Length: 116
Length: 113
Image (cartoon, rainbow over all chains, first blue to last red; front, top):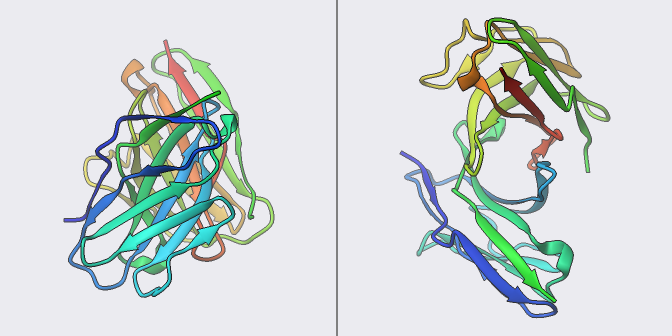
């Protein structure tokens, strides 16, 4: 069975500093996708970054980067230069087979609070 | 990125009534869309896969007769919560996407009294 684990229920970070949100996953599939989403208090799910299992380079999107360590089955999100607007819930997710349909299973989430 | 809309954004209904939630892809065609449910302070759980022109596929434990899904066009999927009860109160959110990225609608908060 596939599983996503986020072990940090809550995190604090000082404004302008970098923060790493942990995500580990479990799957027996060779092909899968890993996603990070941000959910502010309004409830909308905002796509941040995607990493394919066969991508050799870590994905980056602006201030977001994904530290993909396939052997360790981890896909940590790094947010550089934190901003107050980054305060939100962050969910790690993995696509379930068949992967072309992009059904997602989600971790339990990490609440990030950015301190001024 | 692609845009997915949902309507209504929130709804309050009496126990026993049915509620329809619409999910629209505004700038792409979606043969497949997904419906999730999120209880307070919990993660998103996939309920079902909505397939254009065919029956929806439901996840284990989700009652297909209670959560009716219709995907009549490439831009519209609807979820109808039939005979809603207070335990159905939740945040319902749909997703779809033209490629690797899955874009989510803004969600519908359902409260059943």
